[in-house]
Image (cartoon, rainbow, N blue to C red; front, side):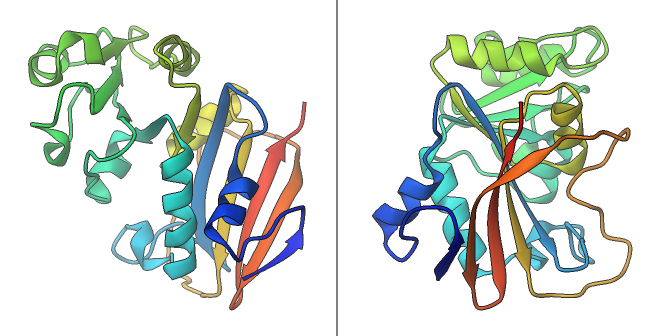
Length: 224
């Protein structure tokens, strides 16, 4: 593992952690992976067929640094999310708690949803009303969700997608940093990109770039 751009030593656990420590708080970081030809998922619809061991290592570093993990309901279901470590905050307009995140310790799972969500009452019964954030009528107000997390002491938020949620966060101007891993694979097919949604133009600058056996791990800082 070698550092191509930026400061720090990625060859030790402490050095890698220092590279990814946010420069200030609050901070919203997104973490995504894609193949060289831009596929965010493989033929099975999961990022697990795109990533590799070094990406997983950095994934765990980012998880350890985060106060909360923000994820879209579709991604949480497809990637079979489990509640461990930082609280998982699921964004769902339907108000459904994914099956694999039910029955967890109080506060381990939060749900960001809307007043019109058909599953709102069931979600409150499942994880507790205090862990259900209603921040809009038909669309989740992501800025209000972040405000709520900050108020509860979760100031470093890690978004793990999916592409639609990341697109919405970028459109709302809420992202501070994108961690993007490019793995040395060509997948073709109809895999999704790391961001989907309406066209947007978000300037970024390169904060750091690590290379390991052809895998590139970049930290891109949103300008302005």
